Image (cartoon, rainbow, N blue to C red; front, side):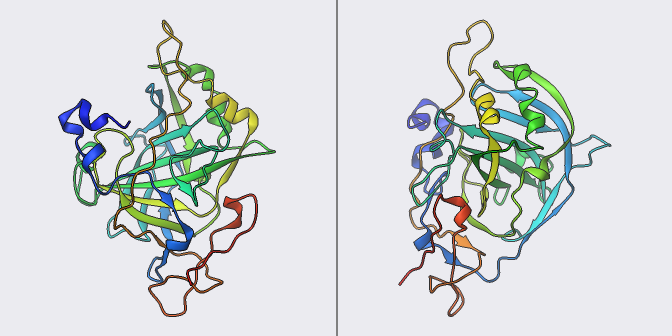
Length: 286
């Protein structure tokens, strides 16, 4: 990943851009924005193709499926309507560094990224990803817990059918919305795709609460391969782009406040959900 910008002239943003993703989120530097409303998410289920691309496992949503009309998102930091088009999963060999985004320097077991394109301005994901305000990405941080995640289990059950690069299967009427944590609180910033060509057209929304999957479910992901069945050497685990500099960007939050902190409204405060950590912490800026 550190050499993407040198490998292809069309990927120059990967090493020259100043709005790149992922980033570390420092709770002490967050800006509470009282204008950030909860996201409005319409729809639950999608149908599409679950595909091993080698660098990650993705669900490509079928936008024409009549039995699963799709998911549309607006509100929050968004000025337009966005239509869900893709889901990708990032993870590693360890439970502590499997997410692309980190909170206060801490990683998570995995990160589910749900991509949606601006359907008010663009006709598809390909056009939107190269255009201003083109893409929304919902980042769901994942931790390993004691119980399996009922809805994620649909993916876990078919892992053996997507073990190798190029493997694919149809996933019908999958409740993608059920993978979102039960919270209206989030952090948001303007960034990029985390894979080439690293277009800086993404509004990121990172939920303030993780979801939990079982050890068996994360182990299933770690069996996925980067290569085809004829050369099954490299594992997919570790499909994580290194953290990128934040530069002058601000990360905003709509999270309940309990202590004085940096804010766009006088005397507003901010709290990072304790579920994101093993211990409960409140953060503030003096």
